[in-house]
Picture 1 (tube, rainbow, N blue to C red):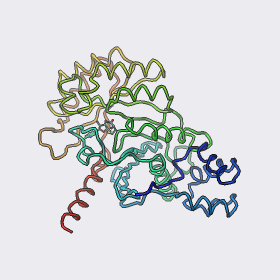
Picture 2: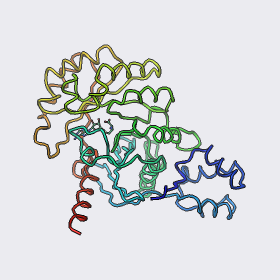
Picture 3: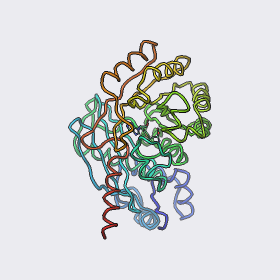
Picture 4: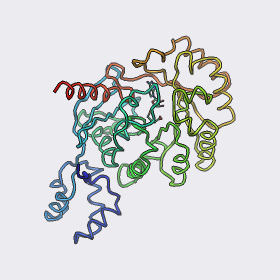
Length: 363
Ligand code: SAH
């Protein structure tokens, strides 16, 4: 397929280059980005302060929309999940999680994922390609449009818009760092989305050199690392990435991140019965966290077809939390949201892919 030219993927400087190459004034770049990201228009014809011939030239070279809504489901707990189809026919998911006046969006960064974590649904889809910056930004724009259409009000009584972005949907954001960096810069830009650094969190399975690159680039975001196990043997068994960058290397990188950004790291920790939700794991987790400025975000395993990985019972979860809290480690448990709409990472797109595969097989 020819490269799909989503105009939202371009930086202001790239837009200026295109403008000058096409005999247009460079100040138009700001106007164009304002229409795209602040007013969220969907047609070049709506760019009213641009001369008609400029709009025509833009429409010839670029597209504004790159996702087609395939499904959108509203959970009884208020979470909303979208299944979007890309222009080359693949499915990605986006989830809106409204909590006490905050509107967090969990975005996908890749079509599928190459990391192969044994407990993750997206892994079962394999890896297709990275998402373009414009596609990731569009996930957020489409959620903003939804919020506008529902007349949702924020904590200040103003029309609600997305307040927080978590790069925790399908894919490994640090394997798509060029585009994720662009997205964060656009979101952080005061003239565009104006989201503070602390409102964006990139979650990684632990690509060590890319954590360093994130710091070097000064990407405006916070860092979460999916630790999920406390020793190399167990972590390598569920997260193959650990065979390349074991826990010691990972912690070296997160320590460097903390030192250079003066920001704490969030460790995500999926609680799996008998694997990560044990007294021994709690002890090891305390050993890792006690000397560090960090927080732990525990997540109860969202069970899939694999019978060897089970969610712990409520008592087991509470016991684990109590043990860790007793050591004065900050640990929160993420309430599973949107279970009724398959909101967990990759579940809906996986279902869709299975249906699509079954359709092609029977065709
Ligand atoms: N690749 C990135 C971001 C996507 S996964 C990463 O690994 O961080 C986002 C989070 O969902 C990770 O913390 C991951 O451990 C968690 N996760 C994946 N599958 C899960 C499941 N079945 N149940 C609970 N959490 C899961």
